[in-house]
Length: 425
Image (cartoon, rainbow, N blue to C red; front, side, top):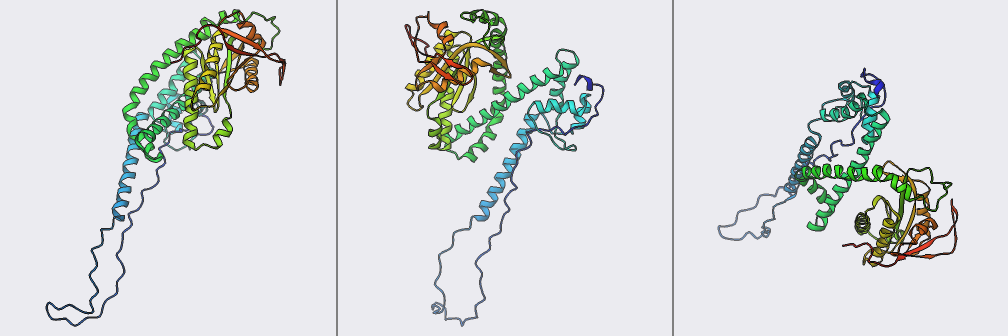
């Protein structure tokens, strides 16, 4: 990017935006409704006044008015209103109409098309055609902010793209989560169908965008402060604490962070999901994730990610990880809706990148989850060694097991000892 700053030329595929206007099907045409076909009658002789006509057909009751045309008109008006609402909301969200092509935006930024495209793609948006006016001045300003950091030497190009990608991926997941939560609320609280709920959400978004933005900015700063403590201030102390029982030859020895890494996996999730409808399955997964997130937060840990029926979490000390693990196993076993969970915990060293964690410690914790019995917590020998002097925990050694990629492992079941453990509301 820095090399491209002087010029605005360059080749490459077009950059684009994933927030194209919602595809709206064209309004239904209003179909005129004709009456029943009739054929002319031959003239009849007129009867004397007051006398009934013996050939006359009996009078039929008046037919109710045909509402087909009225209904079609209502559909057309509803779709027009929907299109207008979407257009208004898009203008508000994007800060104005789309007036710039990708070449015009790159020209205003003073970079090549390739550099502009790299940042646009990092935000998670696809390409558009060369002549499409897909960008707003706000798009230019946002991308220009990252370019300015490179120009001033604060970041190099690779780091700027990585930071931009972090924002794009996190906000993409966040907005999908928020919209689906609002849709589910409309369905459960107001009895709407799914299409009705999605239209209703469009109508309510203007009212909640600003409050959500305020909370998001607050949360970003608060989370950044917490991460600063975790990943910088206390990192050295964690490495020193993890040195017990090690000789430096371990596979994870070069990795920079000491963490207690745990997995919690719902038992029989696959078979249960086959018997559930979409809404019931969604409610179960959401309940599982919400309960896990709450327990992990209370215990001072971090929920790294959720993958369907499984959560990955970490904590800064083996004791905190053990408290969280026991609370997770207990909560799932006592929940009237959720199945039991298998839980594992390994104290070791990890690499933290892209919001995720990597290394042998993570892999071993994943393997131990498959070996654990429902409702139990399984730990490895190193973790058992770190916890054995703490009266809050009881460790029950298990027979050695061969674990793929690790050879023979001597696991232990972790159980609660003295004290009340993690207090969950």
